[in-house]
Amino acid sequence: AKEPVRVLVTGAAGQIGYALVPMIARGVMLGPDQPVILHMLDIPPAAEALNGVKMELVDAAFPLLKGVVATTDVVEACTGVSIAVMVGGFPRKEGMERKDVMSKNVAIYKSQASALESYAAANCKVLVVANPANTNALILKEFAPSISEKNITCLTRLDHNRALGQVSERLNVPVSDVKNVIIWGNHSSTQYPDVNHATVKTPAGEKPVRELVANDEWLHGEFITTVQQRGAAIIKARKLSSALSAASSACDHIRDWVLGTPEGTWVSMGVYSDGSYNVPAGLIYSFPVTCCNGVWTIVQGLPIDHLSRKKLDLTAEELTEEKALAYSCLS
Ligand code: NAX
Image (cartoon, rainbow, N blue to C red; front, side):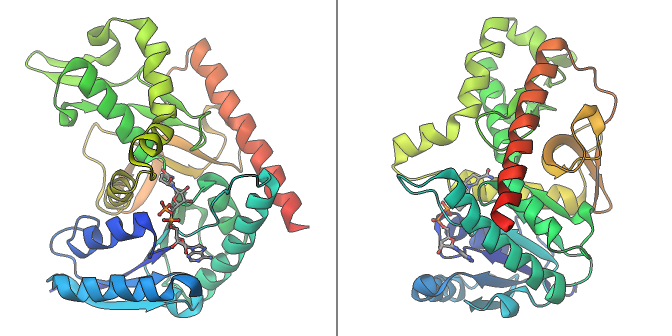
């Protein structure tokens, strides 16, 4: 039998946490034969709710779940974890300045970075979900210098999956037959959902999405805005932000990272830019990646047309500004 893997979820008493921890305990994230020990962190005002989640995890009697740590102590939460999913953060409240929200999150990610740096297992893989996800991940990277930049990522897989979903709905094909969309850039409304390289499996082989949709107006317009604004549409409909789809996508992100992407398929992940596609190095930017043996690699050599270039640059500019704002909160 495999040794259990310790998985940290921060903000575990929140909405996404509540959807995510049972998925992890069922093997959705690390596979059906991988036992797990869940470490759940939240802040003192949520301690009682967190304990309630722990009670439900016990009550669900998940065969793969070998232990639960529910704590408000960041050191206890981070000790020995091999996977860290950072969902906790300070939400933007009405009337708050962007800089004030950033400043709160910078403080949180700085201190949690230090705890991971000192107490997590060697080679711990980190996924930041909490917004501003890319920039929180960058702060975490800065303050956990002993964690490899290859091990610090942010979630854009939800946006990626939303793009697959929109194509599937439009063409009336199973979503599992659609692949290789790309989310470029920031997990924000400047992200660029790109279908230029996406394909659909058909009885006659793989066909480009562009050819099958055959409607550039939709692809350049409604498709992009629907994906960019899907989060707001969910809030409007549910009166709560996306949780089940965010949790499911976080599992997809870690599963593909650890267990590998299928041959011929790439996924979108927010990763540390090395300057690929002329994206400024030193940002956490969403790229198309393949994963093998627990290591992601940016897909190279995709042709970028003029329209796409402008969109890649626009979202990079926003991230550069966010980075500057985050750094200004440090001083
Ligand atoms: P909730 O407000 O329901 O939950 C957040 C939880 O984090 C709360 O229980 C809170 O007490 C806790 N928390 C706050 N500060 C903490 C700290 N310092 N340490 C540990 N826990 C802390 O929000 P939820 O809907 O679960 O969303 C969580 C985050 O995900 C938000 O930042 C949200 O913006 C972000 N999202 C990111 C997405 C992505 O694709 N990257 C999509 C979904 C989601 O909107």
